[in-house]
Amino acid sequence: MSIEKYGMYEYQIIKEEKGFVYEIYTDNEDYGFYTKTNVIRESTEWFETDQEARFAAIGHIVSLENWER
Image (cartoon, rainbow, N blue to C red; front, side, top):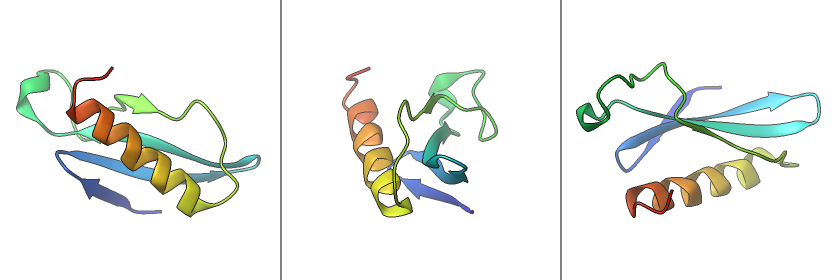
């Protein structure tokens, strides 16, 4: 699947045997050593559909942008 962008973060939905998961990346220079290829957050649960995983990833990004880590 392709990398998508929401806010200042990029994320990817990944299909695995148990379902779908997400990984969140960033290219924001404020994060110093992080790059687009580094995962800064990933889902802690499996989702039945890619849309559920996408919705969860976007919610996680909104939290990150509000500094609710």
